[in-house]
Length: 229
Image (tube, rainbow, N blue to C red):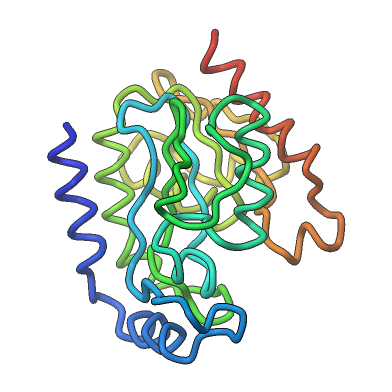
């Protein structure tokens, strides 16, 4: 199993399917932000992170330009990760409440973090064709993660991409039956793990109060119930 995940991760990092995204990741890595001018930016597609035998699967949108695109690890080094890992730590899924670099010692307990798109997109807005090009990676992860008991989708895009995989695989008849909402639970089909939607912990949501730490922690408390029961 570990070899399969290693192979997938290597393929993700080497992927060059979307020229616009490749150019953007490299450009950000060269220009940098003043606060991170001494960093050697990752500047490539970002692989998933976590336990291959996880019972909690977390799907995000895409790497942040100066977060995961800088550090090389999902949700690491930006405000989104500050919120996410504090909530995961409070609910027992992460070993520490913050993530600053991919070698900071943080570990996930029974959780696996991936994304709908593996490259940082301009304006955090991947194009439809870029989402489609990246989807096979998530499809393979869903096949390999055979112990998952609950899926948390961070944001509508991740929610829709996950449902599109189920629909195209003949597991659900339509995506329309599943309405996105924060901390809304869906039973998609017999034998599949429940799906919980959550607002994405982006700066836009957290700075406006649309998503608070307590709201995000409640999502993972709900996920914890599925894992423990």
